[in-house]
Image 1 (cartoon, one colour):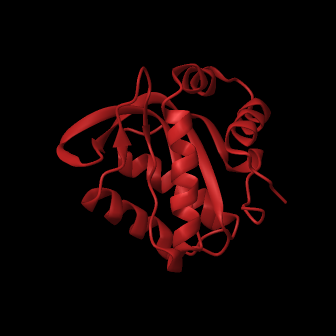
Image 2 (cartoon, rainbow, N blue to C red; image 1 turned 120 degrees about the vertical axis):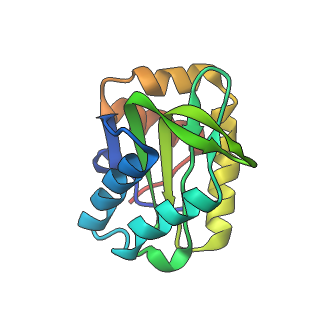
Length: 157
């Protein structure tokens, strides 16, 4: 994933939102403003999250991994949102349930196979309660970036 764009500018600390749509819109707008995704990305990611929820009630800290189709992406990136307050997301595989999410990993992949590869790497983080806790408690974007680069073996430009 050598062409993955990931730096402090796509990490959000204390992100506020009352609903998952608020959170997705805010994170999506930021990616649009950086030219990483197309305008269509925001509506597409909200629609996909409504149809195929991505909330994961992990050990300790729930996460969500919203993503959408490659045609809405200009450049492969992952945006991280550390939410100030938990926001309910539908549970992946069971849209009748919700989970209070504190960490959002918004994926913008320009190739379907890259998305699958990144999801597999992220699943290791989701199983590590200490890493999730470190991410939620981080006060500095650089610490989050370094931790994720180490855990995901990211190579960024």
